[in-house]
Length: 338
Image 1 (cartoon, rainbow, N blue to C red):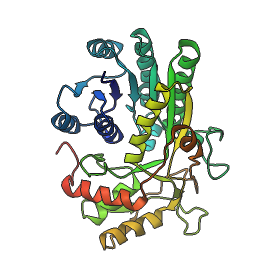
Image 2 (spheres, rainbow, N blue to C red):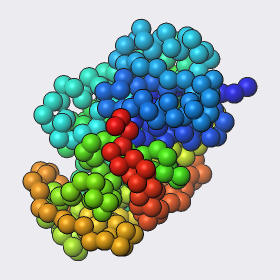
Image 3 (cartoon, rainbow, N blue to C red):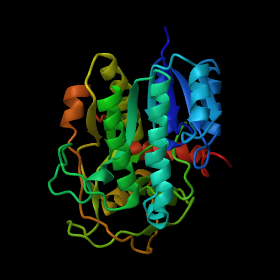
Image 4 (spheres, helix red, strand yellow):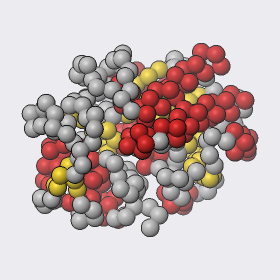
């Protein structure tokens, strides 16, 4: 029997690539997005590739138990939920923390309550390394204390705790995936990031190298060899693979768990700029923009736990991420929705 996966935020960047991977692996996908920041076009494309019987999508808000309940009933049984819907701009979260608590924490509670009331007991959740705050030790293990530095990170940690409580009192089985810095597009370049402007470094460097948009350095000077922050950049296709492995892990009787998803390697901002320049044979202008506050120097993931327990390996390099983004942006210079 073909298993049905309910994917929230499926019209977004990571959501569309994850839906693509699930469909390619033989799952049926019920995709939900309210299209406030996601797009219809990738879901229409997926339905075109795999057929509308394999990929059905709905405009719905995960904060509405009525909307969610109706869709779940229509497509029951739902094997698992992959929850990627979220607001994810740090700057916006500082300006409007109420929005982030509502969209990321309260809506997750609504989703879980609806799952439980309809007999769906398996969840894979999209979280973030931002819950750790400034790293006290490198690499960062899952046991590292959490210390969110902004409302976005705090709202994601709230959502994690809500899920953990549903695990304790309602027997929801879950995997929490803490992403580090996601970059790249699907391996074939058909699905990628459409945020305008993007808040992600590698994407913005590639866009600048292709002449799509100017690039600004917004990082503060920090204590690293070249004075720019070091981050762990992980290919979005590796992230999507981890969701499939998380579902299989829970299918096999695995206990609820938390995993980091990173490459296990750090690259500075200027190293990323240089890598994009090498890949494109260009030297794009790097003007100095308004410095973002609260920048910490370095964070790199330990991925040993995901490797050991899930059998997951981050197999794609930063150069592969750049190559896939070049394909994506050459085909979609303005992203979806244009």
